[in-house]
Length: 347
Image (cartoon, rainbow, N blue to C red; front, side):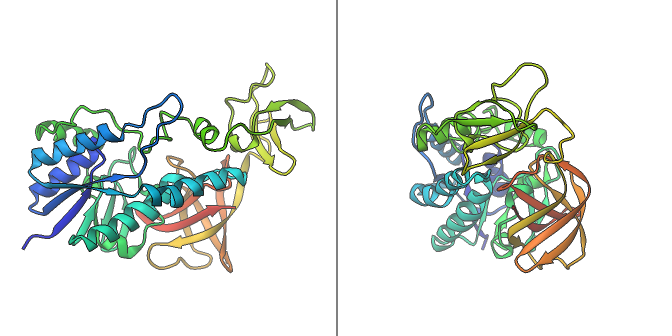
């Protein structure tokens, strides 16, 4: 008997091709639309109904069962509230990583297994192999960075068929299979990422924030910000200060409500050769103290060699070269070749 696979279908081309490939490979496929967010925001209508219909259309084309799981309440508490609390604390969290950890590879997996599935599948550009996470074949689209907090157990029950393809080939497959989403633009995912800027989203959630001083590298107040939580390390745009040389955010003090900037691109606060990680997560076995691996300090950042040094539940990374704009709250993900070892949150 063929294995039952529940495919997370978002209404986009990647998850449509994922479902189609699994049907072609002989799996017993059910499409599932995860309703995580439906709230409209100022100047933006959440397209969840349109995405749901697009996913359903593809399911009908493929002749597979289709259903919707409503995770909106859990998504709010586990992803959105986490993100908002992070910004309020002065760090820059990553909601996509939390969504994968808490929703797609936990809630969805649990609900699918309880519903009779043997496995789940997603349209991620990464590869799951024997409970290990490997990078996607397409280096430009590789999404393994966002998946480093998924467990080995969840990966052993997950399929990621398009991780073995280049993105242009996925588009071609969609057209060859005459899928109704073949020409649909790539979605921006959740409503408040992409079309709705993070600042607009936080304003809608929290309301206007107290104004405060923008202070340069000489300790001089050069302008006023409209909420320290909106600013992130390395940010250049949206500061609205001075002509002349561009300013870069190098720090902030949430207690004093001050944002610190510099015009000096070599400012030591912009560059790090060492960083500390907390809230560590290892997919398989934890690496050894003193081991050398590669680290990615943000999505699409180049890999940098690093040496690991453990101190109880924290990890120090000594980098082989200086890295710019390492941001508290973001994730640093460790790789051993094309295998994702795990990682943690930048302190």
